Image (cartoon, rainbow, N blue to C red; front, top):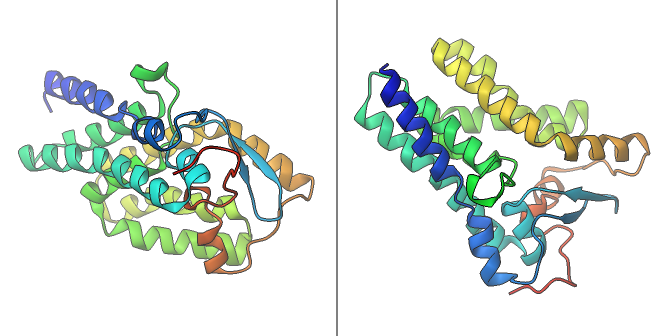
Length: 234
């Protein structure tokens, strides 16, 4: 790889990732809401304070329609530049750099005082262009283990991402293994505040175990679970 090209691609990817579709959409559909602070109602009635600005904070207020719109837009802002770079330089690893950079920009956007989302949508958007087969395989295994073995909602949501590391160790290159480690570290660091609050609620016995796949999918806050009726919606 040429260092100059790698640096330029990283900067461009970061600037693209810094575009906040949650703020763009939220300004239209919930103009008076403070998207940087969202109380999320978890199964069992416990409330988790979510500090990201993302599809989750929009969907929790408006229901699934706008949450999905923001989530898809955040995926596309990672997928499109990653795919373009991969097609332009098919024999180089620049596409991995842009995928990580877009996710970093989404989490720490320069346009919004470095306060963004937690990175799950751009993580999967970039992964679509890196190795789309990994998504259904690792997600299905991670969700099944989280629901049936560990029996924890957060583990079910996030374990599939960590399984990307052994996935790329099995069928990828060393650069792809580093990519998988990088995106997981970005997500994990971004989620530290919510993770601490979540496990504090779990230790206090305030969380309900999710009993079925349907309940699990419906409980995601981006789908409108725990919708705030007091906030202005569509």
